[in-house]
Image 1: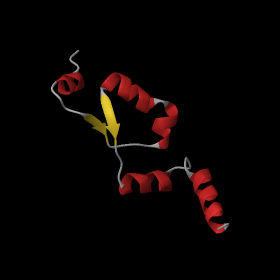
Image 2: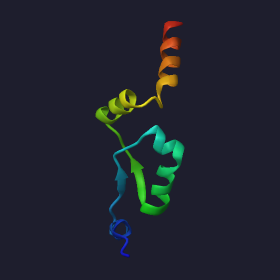
Image 3: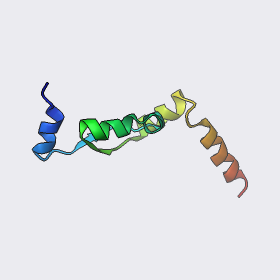
Length: 73
């Protein structure tokens, strides 16, 4: 099977992922994409970040901790 991402990489194209998430970091799927799919960078945007915070509990504990720390100031 042709590895089109490798062909692009070999041609000088940098493969970036516009979908960073805590789940991707924790599960190791980002590492796998770097290793197997030639991903060399990641980015995100406010919409992705908003969805991550509002549609998942993956960030709840950290947000609660940050809010509590802010109140202590």
